[in-house]
Image: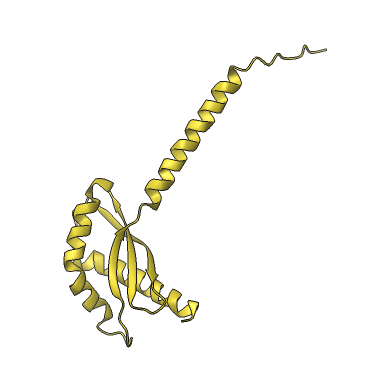
Length: 129
């Protein structure tokens, strides 16, 4: 399977599924759900859809709600497609942002630690001539 066809399929599913979520799933106004990535298998049988959900504490309940509607959403998504094989959609939480936030906090802690150890170092300044 060509990488170009796979990329087109991933882009199609990402845009279309994102639009469907907004129209078909009734989420509270304080919950943000974004399709961050789609990976379709090379045989087009499965598409993994990664969702970023904010606040993170609502991830489980939002995924459950969307998964209950997944057969209906899949039918709507592929009703007018000319595909011979329609990929089965699978939903996963996208933890990339949370991982990046953790790494950023760790890097900030290291910077603070280095700065504090630099301030405490016994390096004497040379007198100005």
